[in-house]
Image (cartoon, rainbow, N blue to C red; front, side, top):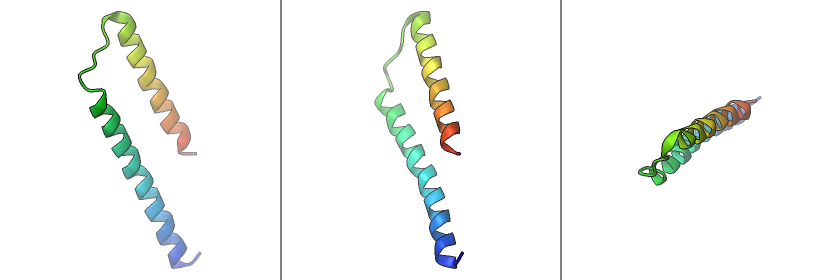
Length: 61
C-alpha cells in the first residue's frame, strides 16, 4: 500500500464516523419533543434503540 491509499482509508473511516454522528444528531433533534406515552410507547422506543445499536454493530464488519 502506498501513502495515498492509507490516507484515503483513514479519511474514509473518520468521515464515516462523523457522518454517522451527524445523522444520529439530526434524527434526535428532529424527534425531540415527541414523547411516546404509556408502557407500549416505551417498549417501542427501547426496541428501536436496540435495533439501531445492532445495525451499527453489524455495519462495522
